[in-house]
Image 1 (tube, rainbow, N blue to C red):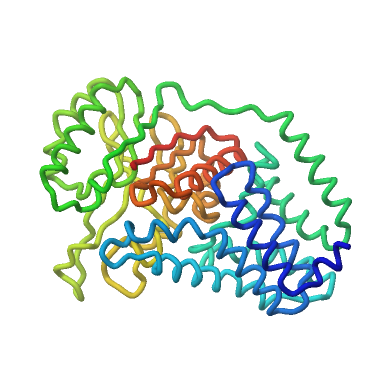
Image 2 (image 1 turned 135 degrees about the vertical axis):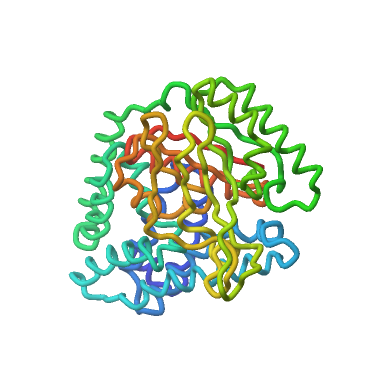
Length: 396
């Protein structure tokens, strides 16, 4: 009955869309459902059928973007903008699956893992969310790179031995779950969630920004954390004046041998073609207090909204920048906002042997959507895979 059910042209796209929507609904345990979509490609009748199935998978996985677009893009944002970006990304990510599709068993068993890898690494990896590779952290916690290899091998062997490969997957999952223990954050490390709305996004109400900064500093002073992680981009522009305004607070933190990790924007130098650009900035997590040297720069900002490949403003793309910072004898991998749902930023950080994972987001624009939960579950999966404690700070 299963082959007959799958023989319908609309069945594969519908099943792929359903699994995509459920897998990326923000629940950690649902992520392994993402493995269903690439397996469905084995039953596709043609390149178009395979492309349509994966297009529907990626489009359904991207649905939380649509309701948040109006806030994120400001005056130019509408749900239609979110829909267009969602469909455009799905169209690009699905293209690889259509081009490499083959009905030959041996070639298909190689093509599917290749498609997974091509959509995870740049250039497609820049928009490569909803990757089935994230299921490795849920299924094989603590297995590190071996878990990723298990996912690739499973997807390949399923073409020849579906039942045996599925049973092997379940057995390995049980083994890794029985031996896994949840790591704890370093002693004295804490993260703070805030509710400042869009205060760090260039709010023209300077009184609000001033009050927000004062509130943040008060929270820092009252904290006893050795390392305190704050959300992404709470401070619109960090410069010499900002440093002076924060001087007393930072001096007190340093005197207590503590460090605060602040999300902020740092202006980039003007260019010959745009010497007066005001919207060129780096989205960073910077250390202040006892340790002042570590600065993490976001490597993959949100395309179009933050990274503007055809413009001279926004946040630059830095695919090969360093992915960890050294803080209080810990090598901390950092993922800012959008980076949490991708593959490339974390795996490139994993090559630097991190000991803790820090995530920072400013999700005021996504409040009431599944996006914050999706970020948290994705980061949790990466942390489980490499047996890392994770600290997350989000602003709403």
